[in-house]
Length: 193
Image 1: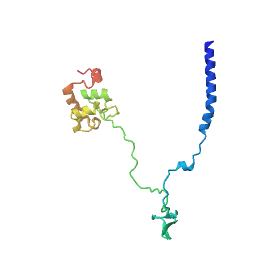
Image 2 (image 1 turned 30 degrees about the vertical axis):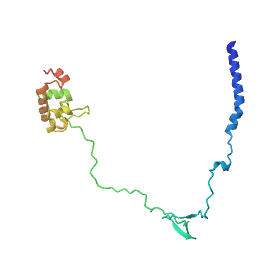
Image 3 (image 1 turned 90 degrees about the horizontal axis):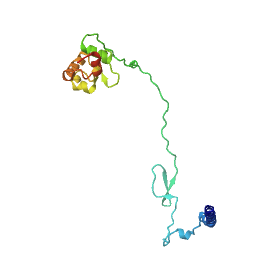
Image 4 (image 1 turned 45 degrees about the vertical axis):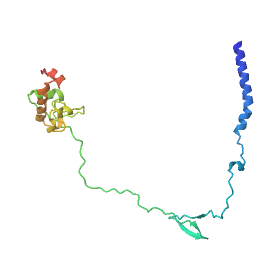
């Protein structure tokens, strides 16, 4: 029963608090008028000159200004409009080069009997000009860095742009230093040392 009494006591306090505070809240929501004298700062009265508020003392270049009693007055003039230009597109047909077809992947194969031809057959299907976009190029699938590291840059920027013979020259330089290790899968498949 103690819990029920506490709940009833808290409810009674809450209701009475709302009943007491509601009139205060309603009164604070109403705007209170402030007398005009309190809104302005007290300033000594300065002598006022008769000023025509419609007169301007600065000339505006785009409007005409007329003098009236020593003061200038703005006389509205025509509003300038931009020049007119035709807004039509004109299509001129000119003779140009014929539309180029999409470049074809060059296929350069060689049915030789050298170890390099066997290795190229395993690595790239024997296509010495292959570039599949996987980061390895040409018949022997050189990376760009390896190609330049072993002097391939003297022949072409990328291995697939070089001839079969030029790729073999770079491969022989690489083989002299590292053997057939740069081609691990095909080395095993072909039984190379």
